[in-house]
Length: 152
Image 1 (tube, one colour):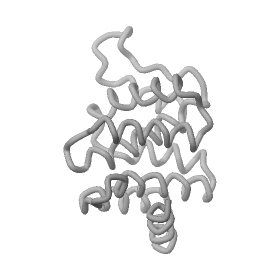
Image 2: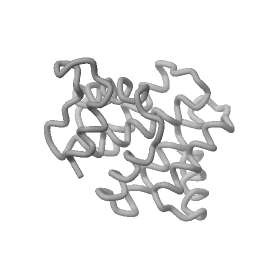
Image 3: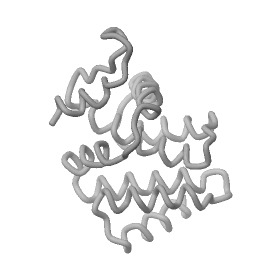
Image 4: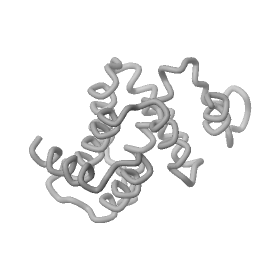
């Protein structure tokens, strides 16, 4: 499983020095989560610094990593996002490694991406809905996460 994720993350690199390396199992979940968060942020085809900051803070909050590690994960995720056409490999990693409560917390952070600037965007909501389904969450959990994100 980890080898497959390494292959996905290293595909498309020009040479071995540019390959994205996952040095340990602890990096898989934050990297997969960062890629999913980036997909929501990118739904409107713009990626603002405010959105990157929110993703960084989400990674720190969700996984207890420090700012330097979060910056590295986010940087790798940005590089990888352009090379992939599907969220399935990343949501699969999240499903394999996160329990239901952790997946629901991630969903709340996805909703925060949609409403952090005060104007929800319907394309972002579509990406969140797709991600919720890929994370095997029920519709009631989808709505509950949306309401929780709005109350923050």
